[in-house]
Image (cartoon, helix red, strand yellow):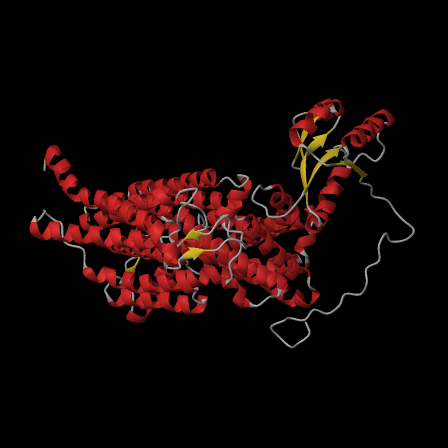
Length: 640
């Protein structure tokens, strides 16, 4: 097929998405006036950010445009056949009809969450019975029951992802446009024409709706529209993954709908950890809150909805681009493709999962600090170490060992793990409370791992020399490196989380906690003590340190204990204009009088709180706490 023929072929395919844009815009225009008369209106207040009563259930226009355009496409293909192009299966629309009824009822009468969830499960089950299902994953054939469970979960995930992300003018529709175009691009590359057209029709319908939904929105899509978008994109992702059994066949739809799925993941993570910290009912996991991804970015953008939506669009485009590029290079550069996807997701979570990481770490530290859980902690670390050692040897033997039977494979892993665990026990590794560990403890752990591997090396040499085994020595080097990273890295990371997470949480623009903007004076020895003190202080009150003022010229522009040295005391006015801090903490135990007078006068003139951090002996404790009262779990009648 020549270039002109290809262009003509694509034009014949792409006229129906243009129809979807026009039809959606026309229907939506009429719905803006009709929906309020029918009682479809979204009230203001609570977690909602719109200021006036707005028509909802506008997704009706998108659904009608989608169905009409797909029908026209089928009629076109049946009357004017195209090579390798088939009609869209009508069974695809049966779950759409079910979700349409559920969405209409919910937008009009507010359906109970449990009932709506049951309806969504029914739609996923109906899709499975219609043949839209996971028959296999990564090349492994699934039994019927497992195929049913995985398929229903897949639909639930996407449907609720778009339901949760629909909290900002134009957000869900814009993300669906980007996801539809991304899915269409991948399907066109694979020559799956009818499914690519369906993805473009979805994007076209959303684009026509977006004309009236972008800020300031004249109507909302409601659950009618958001559940429809989630279902269609889930079905397209499932269909596209069925053409390829590789891991990246499932990565593409996940990355294309990356923002809604990440927001859903964060919502479940956040609500679960919040429940554990507050001991509230698990039913509250299904309750709405105002900590979604778009809410955090909206707060950081000072309430500008248009700028917030564009920021999230850019994030979605980056995720989609990474998914497409990774799928293209996966055959030639598989490790680079995996690394690209993993690094992108890690960076996104590190930037936005502020509240979730804070809650999770607080749960871990509270749990580890409870004496009654000491036995659990003492068991947890040896089990973790055993898994790391076994995993390290398993990976290394699979990659570098060519000799030996399956029995030798198991013997070697068990023997090596047993030697290392005995060394750890002998060196008292499991008598260290790692949340209070110091440098000698980390050195002792490092020497213990090295000693253990030297013993494994000796035992391996003996087995090869006297027992006739042929165990490769080269396996020990990658095993050693993986063990060091897994065991020593976990202990160091645990301590670093305890020290650095409070500051990371309060410094993030996506934190939901009010903080006191603070300037530190003095980068001497007291700064290390202040860093330890500030962790418990941050958990109670919260401060955001903008930097340090110090007169030592050698420190200017450097970082000390993670804080930047901004300059000397003569630049206070400049720093105040730049950072607008409301508190100064003096860390120098004996400040020079002239500098003290400057700080005092500056604080008085600008109404800034001035305090001094000191550590000294005292005759009596500064504060005596009352005996703690036993906590009662509201879900239980027992005293904790």
